[in-house]
Image (cartoon, rainbow, N blue to C red):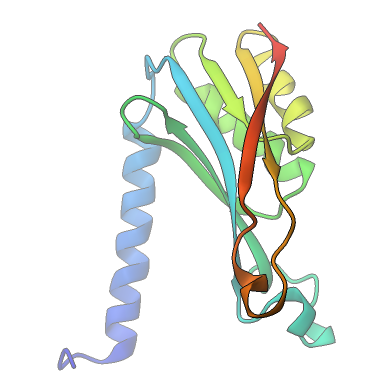
Length: 162
């Protein structure tokens, strides 16, 4: 389609991605953000966990992969992102990176994923106004609609610190 070898395009994309990541790492620093929202996004690489061959289970970048994001709630700037599993180790590395990019104390909101509790405390040492926004969902769908997300019936705010 492009008249260029697929490997040439793939190498260019890898190089471009590395250059963009390096630019963001250097340029997105000393931010005076006021409100930060964090969340994780699930995806899979190669196959969903249940369909992975036994020899590929537990290998990084096969099966479930999570993209952790920190977004300035006002400007929608992505302050930080990290790809990894959904465990405490990734949460701690991610929050440490978020804290290192900020010039001031912020109001932070996450979902109720428990690993955030210790990760936020470890990264900010209490110098953050932190709350969790817990979503309340209705019953799962049945039949053909089972792949549709459940309806969000409401939210509950939980102040954690600050």
